[in-house]
Length: 137
Image (cartoon, rainbow, N blue to C red; front, top):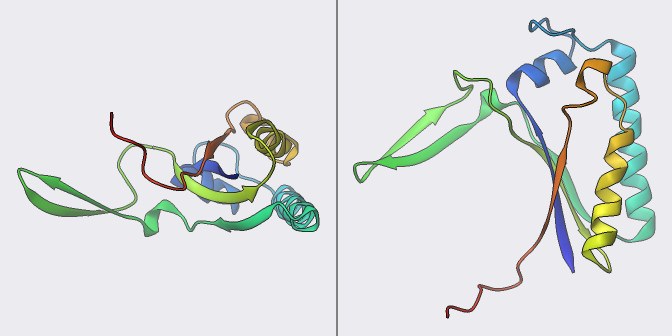
């Protein structure tokens, strides 16, 4: 079965990660390089195990367009958004034997280096991918 592991960040997180001041401590070059090295190793191990289908990081929310509708009329909103909301930052698609194994893989993200002030706010979601539309009762 295939599963998607989703990570999240805000524009403020992206800015801090590349050393910009945001009101929170900015990452150091060493912290950033340690995170990149961890991600390369994490992805490499998934490739070696044959469980990695695809992974991508997404550009900052400032490069986002949100499309919606109001009163039946479409609208487009460019990012960043006024509130400091989290958006999808990246994803992994893994193919493995069970939801428990996908959860185990995602749990490895807890070891990703980051500044101490982020340690308790980082999370990922794991969701099974649907192969077809559900049955309507």
